[in-house]
Amino acid sequence: AITIAADGTLYYTDFTTFVVVKIVPDAEGDYSKGKISILAGLPYNNAVVNGKSDAAKFKYPSGIEVSPDGKKVYVSEPTGYVLRQIEL
Image (cartoon, rainbow, N blue to C red):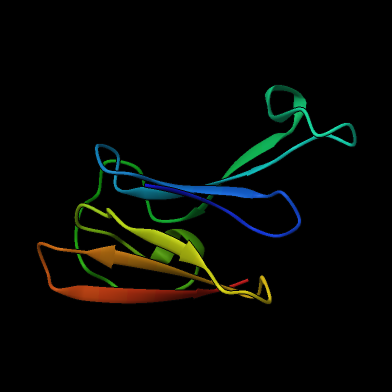
């Protein structure tokens, strides 16, 4: 799943590597020249573990949404019936 915050930051869930990715476009709005980082999760380690950054683990993250104020990201995991909150 993909969502875009009001500031243009793109967030997506990677179902195959079990992470949440953040893409910030460059000053001209070009995502291909922006910064890509893993917001949360540890690649190829699927589990349901709460924690900060790479301490958090996801088991098939699927849905994603950013709060209107851009301070939180919500990720759903259907296999664990979990809705997770990431504070930015």
